[in-house]
Image (cartoon, rainbow, N blue to C red; front, top):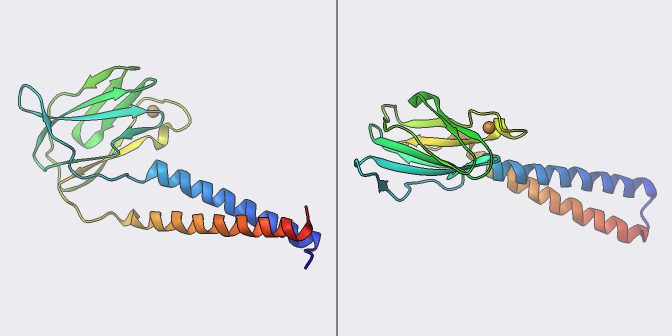
Length: 177
Ligand SMILES: [Cu+2]
């Protein structure tokens, strides 16, 4: 069966849409979704305060999820791996300036916050992805966030991508292009 030019154009369009959708989902999945989480291995400073280490980079933080206990005293030590960034948690009154290649230590803070999720964000403009440079502070063990559907969306988009590419290849075969 020979595909008409109109049909193969339609297939190419479908493939392009699926490709863009799939790539978009992959980006959203890798950038926005907290990877893992849970309790980090605990390290304490000489004063007995728990020290939480993070790395900042263009554009994100690792780990993306930091879990602490309500009422716990912690200190954040944040290393910028590339350029200048900021490390801010509004609810804790924290805002650190991060120098390129240097580790910044926050003062010891008491996490007097209700159980829940709080935004960690970059507070120094660092380019295109600045607004998406975020991590999550989880206090205690709150119920799962409603955003858990996102991995499903990413899977569906990947499936669409696979189907689109298959359709595109099939179309090429049909027209002999
Ligand atoms: Cu930034």
